[in-house]
Image 1 (cartoon, chains in turn orange, brown):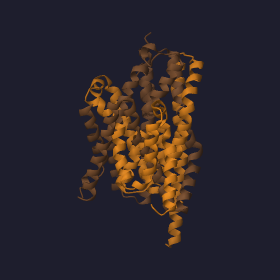
Image 2 (cartoon, rainbow over the protein chains, first blue to last red):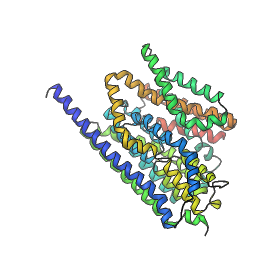
Image 3 (spheres, rainbow over the protein chains, first blue to last red):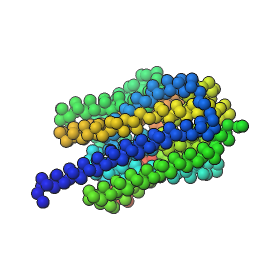
Image 4 (cartoon, helix red, strand yellow):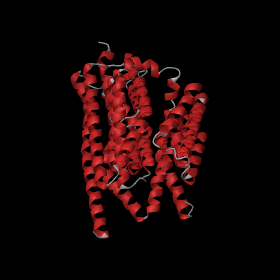
Length: 232
Length: 240
């Protein structure tokens, strides 16, 4: 087989996998949205409840204004990190920044595979699927054992430990990434530290979750500068 | 009728079971599909097994934290609704904020079951549902085209393409690295503990990384992140 025919075969294989994963991903995402909508609808029908329209409108006004754009921006930011299959799966099963994305990053790191390749797409999907199943099992067990587990998980020793899962996770991930490419981290770290020190604390606290895309754009701008100067 | 018995009714638990079953089937479906694609592409099955194993190990600690979030939410919404919301699309941080905002919009002083009525509960469930849909809807209509464009950019200039994706990782991580600063300003004790946890986890990761890379302790590979997190969190357990 010639090099060109091998390349053509590879492209066809990649195309077939990508096409099919987007097709099934869309179907499963549609099903998930349907199930999601069914939950409040089923509650209303079963208990013959008419929801409070005013409360819904006010709630949507205060929450949707922030979270609808954040949801779309998260999809734009995390899509290239996760790849096709893992994106559909992670956006259906949730817990993105606190679990699925670090899990996929860790999996690719262990496999020494870079994001963006088809191999990375496949391994990310395996990682997110394994993670979703594990969380599902742990939550089911937790729901079944809720009464005996509650005092243990809320004990004075374990409660502070579990309150610090996110700092522990990002401390370790921070070392993993910054040690590999510290130049990329300088600009976003300065930006975040200055912003969080100077902003009034109530504003800093309320915008911190939605700040990821801004920091990403600043990091990309810094990376572009370093790239043009041949410093990375 | 006490609303707690409605929020924790058999009917609500049945809905939760349907959602859990859906997530199980979905995850197995994607796993099998990725596995077969990996085999066709010639990826070593041992590598794929290692990825699955390390992902399972990694997930345990954050999942217990999610369970703790469920327990926190159960006081306001019962067990089944938070169970469903934390299983499909949701996350602890988002759900608490959305539920609390919807409850306040409905005139409740606090998100507690004793204040709840079926009408308000239904309204909260609807608000929590609608506001989380942007990401999945984006994926249905735009993900394919968007990823295609990113891939084209990577093919045109591979080094720059890789830098863009690395910058996305770095931007996300740096945002989270700054969060303890806000906590220090709100509650110095908790903030400094978070900072110490972060530094400990980073230091433990550095030691594990050294052992894997330089001392060839390959058995640690795959456990480095969970070990770093657990030791970091243990520090919080002792100090907090």
